[in-house]
Length: 205
Image 1 (cartoon, one colour):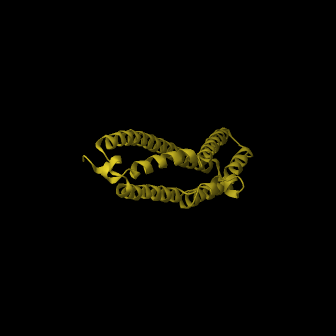
Image 2: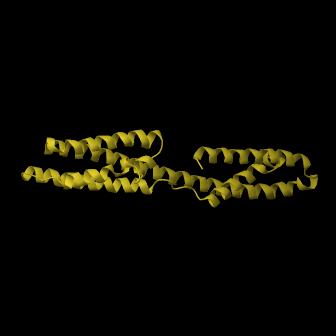
């Protein structure tokens, strides 16, 4: 279920709760709308509102933290892609096919990870999902001719390892859904808050 569908369903429930509250104001007997009753209901609704606000605040903070972590990973991958490309460029023209693999992977990340979903880039079943493994194997197969090439090869291997680790971290962060029970309870709270009769909701304001 997409975020848009969830947001629409929650909005419908909250709106229905508000309409129900307006209807209850017309059909409830007068002895249910006394000052003592409204004070008791207002107290319960106030406590529920505080709890709902607290849960929503924690939810937003968690989502922001997860987004910031993913942003740091993507920025780190971008820097590593530039570094490994520069190391391979300095190694020599024989690694041109490997650099082309990196360019294709970077293009696929930009196209798929933002245009649609990160699944296509990170999925092991797709060719683009194994591109970094191909790059690592190509670097391992290099035969350095001097000390400088040995150093560049070691650098490229280290960076390719960092890229693979970052890729798996992104894969692990894919589709971390909100638990259905949690979503149902929170939506029920907010709906119940909006369902209180209008005379209770606006009395004393």
